[in-house]
Length: 272
Image (cartoon, rainbow, N blue to C red; front, side, top):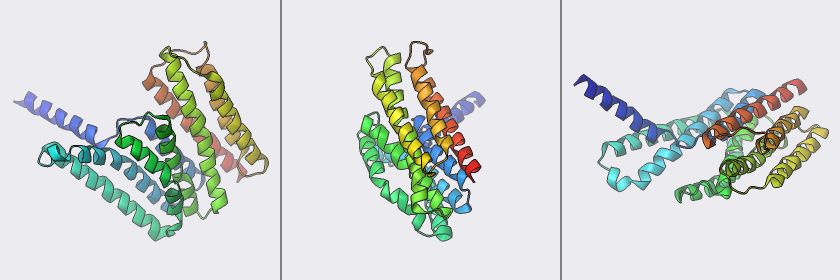
């Protein structure tokens, strides 16, 4: 009887995890990179409230999608009730975070997210079709999430031009990295891949960030951070790489994203 109770409890935990947490791991990195960067550069209570809003809005998508997809079967089931409770919990937390942000900082900091909302809409469209691996979907989601960084910066009384540069810095990380990961996965699976476009994308954004650094719009260490990423792309797409499974590549990219954010943040600190 005791063993059965333990098994039942374990199964309940597993069911809750599959409902409450998204399956994709890569999305966590693209969610927290703008949050960590902005809070390191311009920490404010309002920025923390906005971060809470972003985190719970991100978490809300998965249980809400499951509930809507299976609502007819789940309406009177335990799984359905759990999903609905999780949706209400996440939605309530996101709403409270948003209200707290507006109360502290006004509606202005929310505007960058509204401007970037078309990216979120595109991602949600592909997600509803279970096509999140499509290139446009993989680009749209992170580009939309990156708008959280300038939003947090606006809470800290940054100007719009200065805050928007944070989005550009994150875009310079996102687009080349997605192209690299897609090529790396094809390489590891023995499929044809194109190395040159990946490296050219990195190089193009290095030039773009270098131009911004030259005119003192961003710290030069942001360029150094991107140089680290092109280095990992050169090695990762070469014959000298070590074989990595998709899950390993994903976790490594989270690590590289953290390095990118930390190096950039240090640049802002040093520039005062």
